[in-house]
Image (cartoon, rainbow, N blue to C red; front, side, top):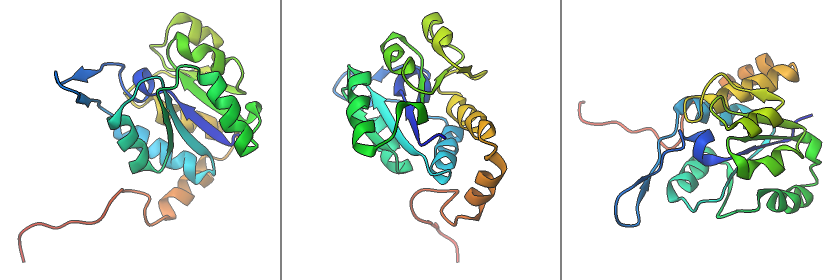
Length: 180
C-alpha cells in the first residue's frame, strides 16, 4: 500500500533547467498536470514530499500552493528519508520515490515503488520499477501517480473523490475583474 510520494524537484517536477536572473532569483517552470497529479495523490491519502538538494524559493512556493511537504538543501536524501519516514511510521516499502539523477539512487534503491522519468540517467532508469513515457517537467508526475493508482486499483475511485471535492480544481481564491 502506498502511503507517501516523494518527488525530486529539478528534472522531475521541472525539466531540469535552472534560470538564474543574475542576482539571487531563480525561475522554474512547473507543469499544471503534475499539480493535479499531486492533488490526486493527496486525495488517495498519500503524504507528498518535495525533496531537493537545491534551495529553491520557487519549489517551496509550488509545494506550499499544493499543500505538499518540502525539504530543501538535502544532499543526503536517503538519510533525510530515514528520519522523515521514521517520524511518520511509514515503512520504505510503502513509499514511491521519483527521481532522475545519481543523487536519487540510494533512496530509489530502498523504496518499494522506485520511479524514473523518461529522460533520467541510465542508472536511475535501471533501478526503477517504472519509467514514465513523459520527461521531467512535462507531466511525468501525473503519469506516475496514475500508474501507481492503477497498481492499487484505485484510479477511478480516486478521480471520483477528487472531482467531488470543492477545492479540487484550484488553489487560492476566486477573483473577478471589471464588468458589472
